[in-house]
Image (tube, rainbow, N blue to C red; front, side, top):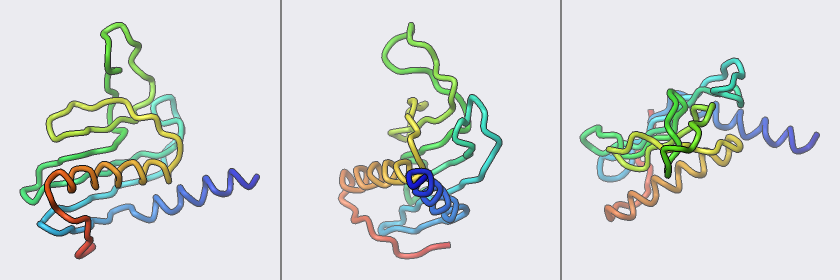
Length: 131
């Protein structure tokens, strides 16, 4: 029972980010969209989400979402996953499967990738405003 309560808390925390835009140093920004949906093969966790990180000109640099299916990476013989969870590591990547474990891990993975890109660009991870 205790494990289930922690999982629900993480999901409620994540849902609290819905609609937020965080502005960072250097004109970069983050956008969060989350909503509960009916559980399905495509979205077994019952969550429709999009977490995106944008350059000052609006270009999406990183994205974690479950809007569509992406093929498995590594071999044309790998079976395409049923679930839609995936992420875009760069602004040009079509997407790679993401193994959704829970809401808190999704948020942590997203922030880790944002920090990676900001470090590569020499920009500090500092939120300067929120909508």
